[in-house]
Image (cartoon, rainbow over all chains, first blue to last red):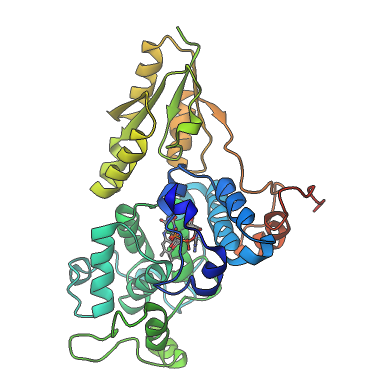
Length: 219
Length: 140
Ligand SMILES: Cc1cc2nc3c(=O)[nH]c(=O)nc-3n(C[C@H](O)[C@H](O)[C@H](O)COP(=O)(O)OP(=O)(O)OC[C@H]3O[C@@H](n4cnc5c(N)ncnc54)[C@H](O)[C@@H]3O)c2cc1C
């Protein structure tokens, strides 16, 4: 398969977080069993001098294995909060549904709108895009992670109950010690000049230090 | 007449899962597609995978009903499929009384490993992941 042949584990280790990095785009094939994690990991190990040289890629494959195992243990409970939010808010403080401007890619924020459109049009988002749009939904718009997870699951080619719902819970902090946040510096760093991160008025809701964002967004 | 048929579900869309000479069926799970609002792109992706699996009969509707009817048409008493961790597929396999084949695991992690956080899993998984294929399993 072409995508298997294109895997570059060393480059992946160096730049996987970057939008232009050497990510594999194998997820829809792994999700549907066209390829197995075992096959991919053996192929990857055969490409490098020692397995350690492919540590980042092998660890990401392990994340998929981990989430599948959690799903095996928890079953449909992964659809509910596995733990309380660590944001100072109760579940009832979060809205049940995604806002209409978000779903229509009309928030005015260039990063948010382009990401929504990209998901709708391609069925794929880079991991950084997924993390950041999930954080935007849950922390900036204060919407229950379940609403975002259901939306993303429906549109992704790799939509997977384990990786999707548990990643959303990780961002939300209902399956992590703290919520995932990003700021404008971080957004600009990984998205390689694609976005300004600004709203229509030229100001960015992400432009602040992490301390300031924590104060602004959490109770 | 065959003794067994294969139920191909949406986590096993590879020709390698097929047993030569054994009939196989895939059913688009209508309730799941509708209830989750699955995108057309996702259905097209699954369709493309199925095109690489010649001989698999493709149907659409209620999975349990369709697979059962398929087995009856082939006078099969055994329905084989791959074990899954997805509760939807697990429930369907249970209802069908399917015989479960275990897909090859990523790593042979001992039962009972603490999965509360990735770091706990990773402590146990890491030595297994980084073992060269030729190295014998270490006792963990
Ligand atoms: C909010 C959110 C939702 C997500 N939903 C899904 C989903 O429904 N299905 C899905 O397969 N992944 C999901 N992920 C995980 C990850 O974003 C994708 O697996 C990855 O971006 C797919 O692109 P790739 O194949 O190019 O990945 P690569 O970076 O090339 O990684 C190779 C493979 O490793 C696995 N992998 C990599 N990163 C992760 C991760 N963080 N968690 C789990 N597995 C990983 C995937 O199987 C991937 O195909 C989600 C992440 C977030 C933050």
